[in-house]
Image (tube, rainbow, N blue to C red):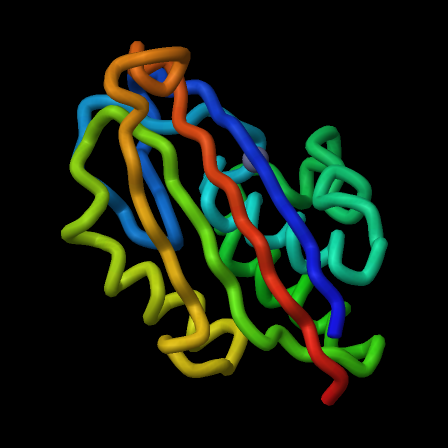
Amino acid sequence: MRVGIGYDVHKLVEGRKLILGGVHIEYDKGLLGHSDADVLIHAIMDSMLGALALGDIGKHFPDNDVKYKGISSMKLLRKVNELIHDRGYRVNNIDSIIVAQEPKIAPYIEEMRSNISSILNIPVDDISIKATTTERLGFEGRKEGISAHSICTLCKK
Ligand SMILES: [Zn+2]
């Protein structure tokens, strides 16, 4: 069994779509980034890579590479999953937290879990996504950005 941790932050700006867990969420701002800036999926990928000491997503998908400009992070998640499988492991379970003052995340969580479940080909029950505010404290509380944390365990296939 291997354990990995992931953390990511993206800035909220006008004129971008808000994509979290592969779900388009109606909001007047979106996250800024080279890809679709899906902060949850980025944290999850980093936890998967971290579990096998494979570095982080910046190493595997450089943000100066035009190949990854505007790319759906779900496609990158598929690639990370292949990497894990190539090394003889599969995801056992994931626990994650989205930290955002706004918008309300809860109505979208089931769809996010189902998206991730179909990419990783593991049961929805092995994927936990939680959401919290910071009681208006810090950059998330001021709605300047959204952060995400993830822990995952991998086991041998
Ligand atoms: Zn990111």
